[in-house]
Image (cartoon, rainbow, N blue to C red):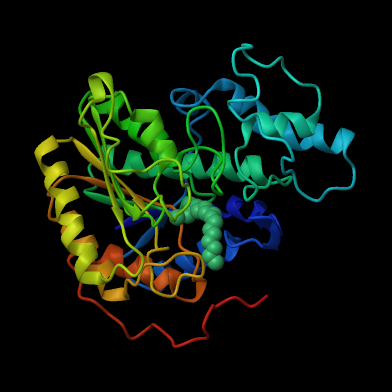
Length: 365
Ligand code: SP5
Ligand code: ZN
């Protein structure tokens, strides 16, 4: 299997995030993608490819051009006016009720106001290298799609920063551009056919769902921690099934805390049946490994053999598959779990010999 990797992801390295008021070391760290790269480099079943530049047109095909413009200039504007802060975070978010009944807010000249206009959480900081890294992640994703358009049946992209939480007009959830949604739209246009998206990240891909909610030609199916307890809290309920022409093309499967391998695979069958019935030209997988039992911020109980099995079950759809990285924060096993998922898809045997035992969180800091 070919996979696409770009070292520019290293430029995106905010030191902290704020979870429920508490500043903590960032979970979405550069070492995540390095762990994946090393695991795939060490396995002859995988060969690396460099991304090619795809420009901004595929981005604005799904995102508000204002979001692209904001992210492009955010660091420069912040530094011009706010010299001391190491990363950009909002302190005031444009909650929909603030201007209820008063029309759109005027464009702000304040950099703190601007980030609150485009960002909806306190965990998705911007540093100097965020924009080039986020653009590189989109190019990684689209180059992975190009491998499929060129005839590969399976291809994987080490997309970092991740993307599935970014809706059309904002960013959050460690995500800036929605790599998977941009890729699905690109594939829909190139093939002229239907695209199925399978989101197996622990978190619901609210951004992807929002972008395609009214689309009949793009199916979005997600298994995730129930929003009653899990980020992003406000989206991802089973009752959300699409709207308008897209009625029935959204499938949410919220799952309880402690979800184990057997429970997960049983529910995956529901999503795969829907994808099979949809008769897509291509499947785009948002691959999160934060369903792992040892993940530090999630509450599922999956083990490494489950990733191998899920990869095999997705490949059994017998449809070309673009696999893009999303979350997964237990860094010591991240690369190995991704490798096993991809080996399952390839029909290679499960190989647990490279999983080393390690401490309870795997965090050094
Ligand atoms: C791509 C992706 O996986 N983004 C996830 C963003 C979630 N950010 C953390 C949400 C808050 C979780 N709080 C749980 C506390 C457990 N100790
Ligand atoms: Zn996640």
